[in-house]
Each structure stands twice: as C-alpha cells, then as structure tokens.
Image 1: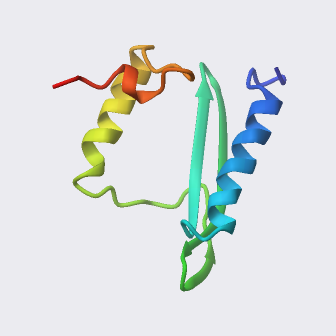
Image 2: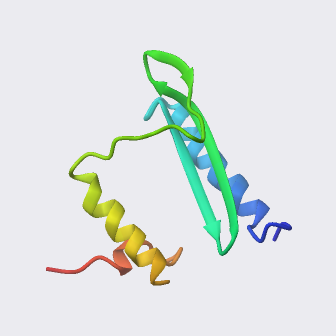
Length: 97
C-alpha cells in the first residue's frame, strides 16, 4: 500500500489497462476515479473526442446516456453498500430475472 492507502501496483495495472484502451483507439479518453475510504486517486487519459485534440481533464463533465444511468446507479448503490468486490465485480450486485 502507498501512503494514501491505495496499492501502487494495482494503480499502475489500472493505468496500463486503461491507457491500452485509449492507445488502441477504443475510446478517445477517460477519467478514472478510485477511492478507498478518504483516499482518492483520479486519472485523466486521452482526449475529449477522436477529432478534438483537447486533452481530457479530471474535471471534464460527461453526459450519461439513458442506458448508462441504470448501470451507473447500480454500481454506485453496490459500492456504497460494500457489496461490489474486485473478484465478483458488478454481477454480484445485479439482480437476476
């Protein structure tokens, strides 16, 4: 663990994976936020759009499409209830129909 309480090894792995998505042009850019208690790590990668060279920043405002809202909400709910775990992922919180 680093002084902030987050694993440096895992943050580097996250950076490598997310950077790969941007480098392969699967997405123009992203902002990632990871927190553990009071410790927060924010990382901005890439650009705003494929055709816009303006860099992504940690205060970029995103529009969340209607289909993304339920997923975002469910993830937020699970995380706040302590049910979202690294190994189980979001599926552990998702209802089965």
